[in-house]
Image (cartoon, rainbow, N blue to C red):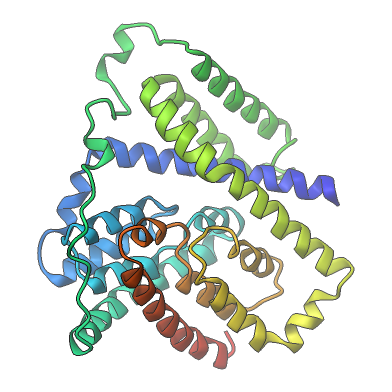
Length: 340
């Protein structure tokens, strides 16, 4: 069982790593042009913030927080973003149950649009003033060193630094392991083909990006800040699920105390951390909990997205969490009552 859990955790973490790298690559490649989505009326703000939140990982949420503390988007727009975002768990859900994950993301996106407008209305009625004294430094991708593709890369040899060699060897080993079936599904299903293809694409990106991207975006951001947490939480959640299913009769407990599990899912979502939500992802994947529990957990939690705002305005962060918790319990409670 332990070997199975470790192998499954490595496969999921590898998929998450590849997806994070590709999202980071696109984010840097755009060089800040996404900020134009924020210009315009309130609806465009809700739309842009919800789109950023829907992007797997924390980058969209971080970017929306940056816009918020600069006064570019409203209180309701940042609420919309935090409703739409599912943190690093979004990558795992895409890996384990993609169709349901896409449906969940769509529902959260639509909920962000609706409750973003409601939040601005309530903020005006309650005279809630958004944080106006905060300001962030220039976007990281405005730095001249921060780019991910140089058109002249094909006209000169690639610098094979120790870090690049290590990265190339690591992804090459992962391609071989997936191809031989040592990691991931045993059969050549859609997940194995997708992971195999993405790894080849990632290998090309790692070979061509500059040292800055390797050091700052891959090593410091993805590996040091996210990957090890993803693996540990995935391993822990899978292990608890396996043990609970085999030895603790977890299915019977959840069925008899589903209301408590529902409240617990919403409560853990308050924690500004990617990780606790993994247990509900794994439980849903195993068919132990209904969609409504996964929905309320995804609705309330926002991964690491709230962490930058906490350092600038604890009051605003608490208000956003309070709004999301109230909205999430209301809408998730409706889904729970109708049997979803």
